[in-house]
Length: 144
Image 1 (cartoon, rainbow, N blue to C red):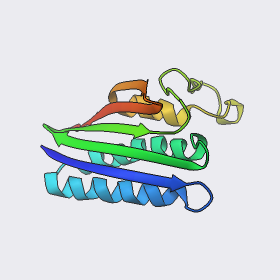
Image 2 (cartoon, rainbow, N blue to C red):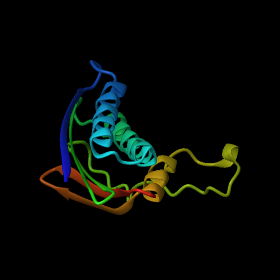
Image 3 (tube, rainbow, N blue to C red):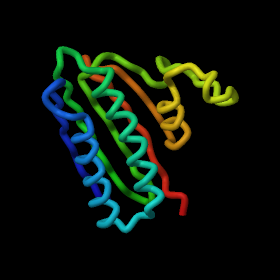
Image 4 (spheres, one colour):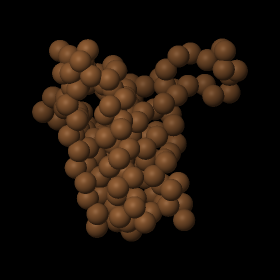
């Protein structure tokens, strides 16, 4: 089993949210090289994490400071991810709007498409709020 832990602290107004994404991308690339997992798994995991972390940093900041802990575990062609943040309470399984993907792009309401992609590209998505922190777990499984 291959494991990696990340701690991201973000102070609103002093740092760019994209700096956090570079840390995550590097961690995923390092793990993928060490475990020799398919590039498709790395790309899907990176997209999912990018969406969730950027949403947390952009919309979940409480008092300007947001801390995010990310645990990554790779075993048996499955990447298990746990994200814990101290942002505003948000359950993406319930609180995110459901986009109508049948409508033309110009007629769609704003919001929900990123979480829709996360739900589509991951498995075993679970959320809980504990000790004033959001806990989100999911798996990304190799297609090969």
